[in-house]
Structure formats: C-alpha cells, structure tokens
Amino acid sequence: MSASGDSSGKASSRNRLASVALDEQSIGRGAPEQEHERNAAIWDIIESNSFAVPNVDAGPYALELAMVEKRLAFTVRQTPEDGEPPGSGALVAAHYLSLTPFRRVIKDYELICNSYFAAVRTASPQQIEAIDMGRRGLHDEAAALVQERLAGKLTVDFDTARRLFTLIFALHWKG
Image (cartoon, rainbow, N blue to C red; front, side):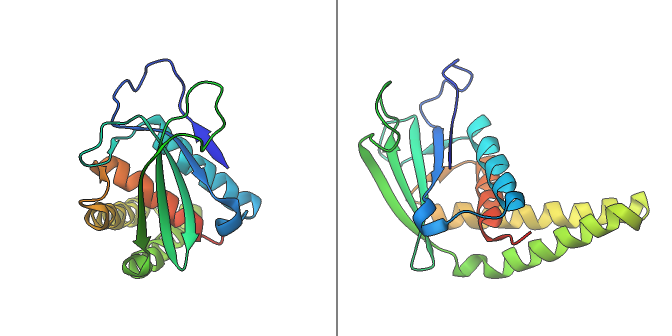
C-alpha cells in the first residue's frame, strides 16, 4: 500500500514526504476498516507534512515503513525519478523506532476513541466535546513522543508527528 503526492507544486518544499508505503510482508494487510484507516492516515501525511533528514538535502523523500522485531523501520529514500519504480530512489536514511514507549499511549488512545464513538450515539454534545478534548490532548502527547523518539534521526514538525502517530495507531488498531 502506498500513496504519492501530486506534482502540482502544492507542497514545493524539499523538506517533505512525497510518498509513504507500507511493507506488506512485515505489516500485512488489515481488514477493510483497517485498510481504510491506514490509507486515510497516509493520505493525510502526504497532503501536508514537514519531513527532513538532518544534514541531508535530498528531498522530497519517499518513506517506507516496515515492522522489524517489534520496531517500526523507517526507510527513507530520494523520490524516484519519473518512470523509475517506487522504492528505487537512493537510500538516504534508515531508523528503527521502538514501539515500546508507545504502548501506553496507544492503549489509552484506543480506549478514548472507543468512548468517543460510543458517546456520539448516546451522549450530550457537552459530553462528546469533553471526550474529544481528552482525545486531542492524548493525540498531542503521542505527537510529542513521536518527535522525541525521532529527534536527531528524522525531523518532523508537530502536525506531521500527529499524522505519523495516527498512522502508527492505524497499524495497531483492530477495528
């Protein structure tokens, strides 16, 4: 599964991701709901992001994510030239992100999302808003953790870190 940004120049910065792909061998396919959430998260990342490799000016970049021994492997390549197959750009960086520090926040985020979806059906607007504020706060905490864990290896702004956490969550979400 992969997505690529368009070449309309909308995101003209070199410090960005032009594509994101998931390694199907290590991550596997999910149920239709999971695949939808993963595709939506990838689309959101491509639509708007700030992504750089410290001391490297080779963007825009192509990112492939894979699971390797309970770590999320970030393989960053130069975006392939027109006509070249995906994943053929020169390797720029590789980083293995331990998911252990994310266990609690993923569990808590899943609980609060489930509460939010249940509340939408039966709760008052004030209750829904309160749960949503908690959900956004937890999402912000997770984004800060993404930035912290990538520091010195890959540089992402806060909004991109939020979108990356959404994808990390979608990879774990069971529906």
